[in-house]
Length: 279
Image (cartoon, rainbow, N blue to C red; front, side):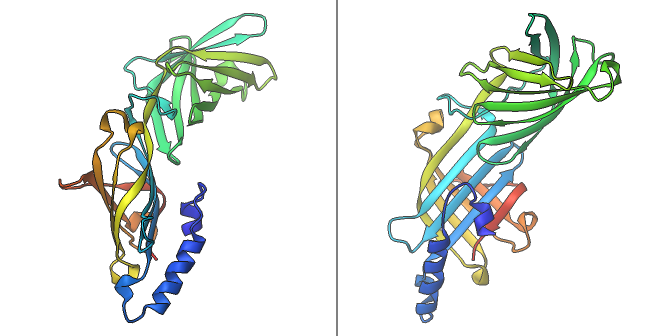
């Protein structure tokens, strides 16, 4: 479970081994044994993702936390993007190699989003060719990873059997996006969306400054604190406290809460991710 939770590149097998060894050697003083809490969770309302490794008893190293709020625009261009909310549809234009353009409209309000990690967001939704959703509709599925986007549009029977377009591209700092695509007939296309179609969202990495961890046999709870770094923009310098619980039966039984240090924490439902593990 731990290796799955921290598949993003944090190696803690040695830490866990050291923790287990230290716990065995400190049976007369179990509270002094090094402890580890790890988590990788998708949080709801608003959509967030947090990945962390909290350490107690490893000297000055208390661990790290990576956090993204997929619904909160940032002020420092984090480089992590999400589709921007809009009351009206967003234009999406495809152009053939011969210069013929085909205007589409992405129904932004229809998008359903799932946070897969702190830098990857999957989405599904609907749109139409032109501006008439009742005549020429289509569905879209794709994902954004940092400032890259990929998607597949599947058209209705009005466009011919099993007709689709698959595209990839990049997002600029102003939220515009462009790239290349190919339809199911093999025709090469380019595509473009205007400025503001995507937004840079709050995303940062911080060092954990303190951690108190209860092993699973003693409750499976952990509390840790950190300070939001400069990458947090207007929130930089804010001290945050996180409280988690390992329910032992998958993420649906785990709990997560955070808040400004010194104030009550707010509970957020864990809606995805491997979950929280406190050995």
